[in-house]
Amino acid sequence: MAPFTIDAMATKLSRDPAEFRARFDTARALHLEGVFAPDLLQRLVANAAAATFVDDDVEEIGTREVEAPQRIGGMLSVLLGRPSLYNWFEVATGLAPIRAVDGRLVQTRANDSDELGWHNDLGENGRILAVVINLSDRSYQGGRFDLRRVGADQVLCSQERPVRGAMTVFAVMTAALYTRFRSRQDNPFAERL
Image (cartoon, rainbow, N blue to C red; front, side, top):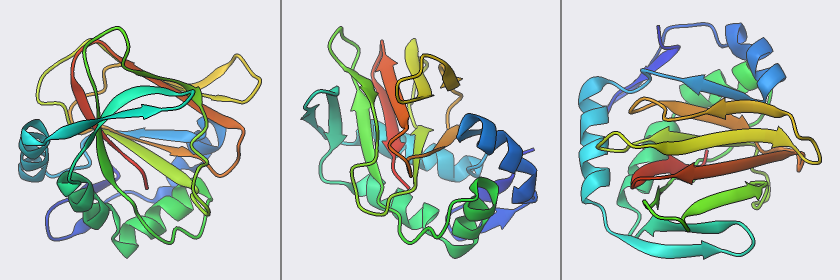
C-alpha cells in the first residue's frame, strides 16, 4: 500500500512516515509506487507525452532534454508543494525544513549519448531532497538510477525501469551523494523537490 495518494485536489496520507525513516537512513532514498491517483497519473503521462522539449547539455554530467515551456513541471510543483506532503517527507527523511518545490520535466532519449553520469545534485542553495518520477507513456529499457556516496563504489540505492508513476526521493543535502541515470528509449521523468 502506498504511504500517500496524490490527486488533483488533495493528498491523502495513509501510512506513518516514521515507518520509512530507517530505510531512508540506510539508502538515503525512498522508492515509492502507487502514490498518484490513477486518473491524475493518466493525465500527467498523457501531458508528458505531448510536451515539447529542448536540448539540455549539462557540462561534465550529460545530455538530456528539458520541457519548454515548463507546464508539467509547474503542475508537479503544485502537486508536490502541499504542506501535508512536506511534513510527511520531513518525518520520513529526517531532513527539514522543506521550504519550496521546483519541478521540471526532463527526458532522456533513446541513443548512445543521452545519460547523466555520476554527479551530485547539490546545485541550489538550501535544496535538501530531489525526486524522480517515471512519467513515460511506454515501456522502455534502461532508465537505471543509482545513488552512492562520493568516493565510494557501493551503490546505496538502485532502481531500474520503475513502474509508471513510481517516485524515487533522495537526499541531496550533503555533497556526499551522487546520482547516475541512463535510458535506452525516450523516457520522460520529472525531477526536483
